[in-house]
Amino acid sequence: MTLKETRILMGMPVTLEVVDPSASPALFAEIFGYFEYIDEKFSTYKDLSEISLINQNALAVEESSLDMQTVFRLAGEMKQRTGGYFDIHHAGRYDPSGLVKGWAISNAALRIREQGFENFYVEAGGDFQAVGVNSQGLPWRVGIRSPFNLHEIVKVLSIRDRGVATSGTSIRGQHIYNPLDPDPPADIVSLTVIGPDVYEADCLATAAFAMGRAGIAFIARQAGFEGYLIDAERQATFTSGFREYVLDD
Image (tube, rainbow, N blue to C red; front, side, top):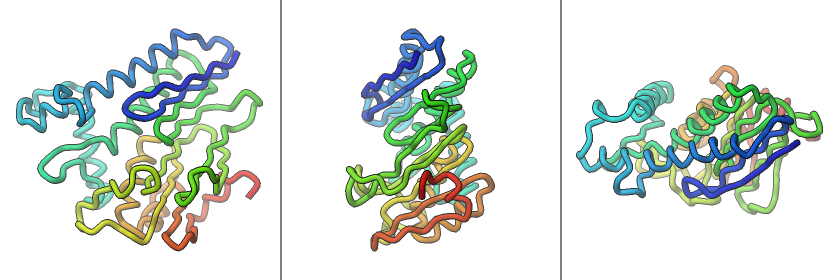
């Protein structure tokens, strides 16, 4: 039995599909409940969320929850890994959204695996963690949308036990902050990263996009990760191992 459901959570569509026969509504309720918990804790739009209290100086990070402290620790590690291009602190406030989404997807997938499920995917706002195979026994298919036409798929990826994340301007406009340069990169419009885990893929995609054209070379240097960049002239640049994930290219 295949179960699939989409709910609007964290201000975006969140989808879970499980093809294992023992999938149940209770599992879906647990996973969607987890995303609701993440939203209540990390939303910068909720005045009483934990991250908002930190930004209001009403709560110290050292006195915050274990999950919050974990996110701040991971953010520090990612800032160092990306040479400062990934930074959750800017304009005097903390905004861990660029880390939390992928981290939440990854944690949700881990929860599902721990219950013995082997074939499923979790997707939130276009970022995926795909595990095992689909209902046809094949790797999951993930489309990369054109940043110029959201109804057009420019590449279809064949993904198994991998995460996929895309950063760009097509849906939310220019929202990616470059902590090392106040002028956002205007030469690229989309950058997709494939990696073992959607958490890392999402953070690296965000940082690489902020780097502009240099971002694809940065991804190429990350062991186990592949990238696909589309520039403002509609030209694509990709890493050497990207093609192995492309279906019928």
